[in-house]
Length: 409
Image (cartoon, helix red, strand yellow):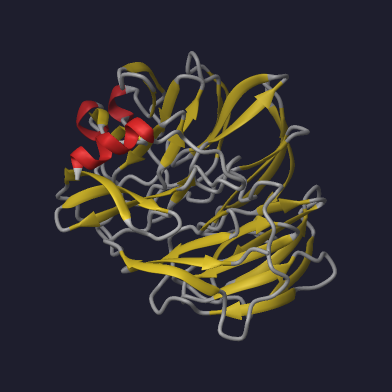
């Protein structure tokens, strides 16, 4: 298998296909697919055509898609495995495995949670025990590995490490959570894996950081266990921060939403609620906050025009509601209790909801009312992994199966 991968790399050039999904929540980490992605107006009665299915290991990490490959990160036996699959067939091309002994402190599963990050011919994974790996996307050859929990004395957390890293410039930035060593947030060299800087005493969250431009200067917006921070990625300097989160059995898990005009939205459940603010490098100003409009457990809100769509509530404490808000005021426009809990992505003027009960929904994001276009249930198990959409194919997984569905036109 390894020899085959090396031979393949010699003749395989990284293809550029429409509609890649190279990291968590898509190309820009905002839940939106590429603008050239096109969806069918509705699904057949039996649901979207299943292009292929294959068995996968344990975990709640969604897949990444780049070129003609799908990258799945799962636990098989006592190993966390990064595997490259052919997008057209689901056949395995290469795999890189690392041993794990992880067991969650509170319920849940024992597999990885973080979506792989594909960047500049490399794939980066962050495992449940804090193992950060970088491999060559063409061959699966491991380039470097860091045991971040050991190196920075970071605890595993309730469900293991779950904040997907981000690449900004030549740095891989991770909410490691090494609070005792002032290594809450650490930057690693993309080329070598060496530590570049370590800052703050912030514990780790399950929220993925996002890249934002502040006056054309790259920054990182991050929600940790107890705070929302704006970070300068080259130095690690914290421009500002405000408290967000609370102690006890709570998590921050939704990814921050950032608008190009300098607004942000962060949200969490457990009585924490939401904060919407304007910001620049010097500070922030709250526009609205509270729990009345939105307080979601881990669904990242989707911003479309002047509105925000999200599945509000908690997976473990029903009911949950599909919700539409005015973005600038937080005013609740409508709710629909039929959706159940799950996650959302957007493409071609539609929303797709992946509900935890295995149901998929195609929704038109209409500010006037909830408009459900199609419903299907392609998987029998529970869906907690984020879906991915690339080149008209939707990739969804439950605890045992990864399915590739034809949803394009």
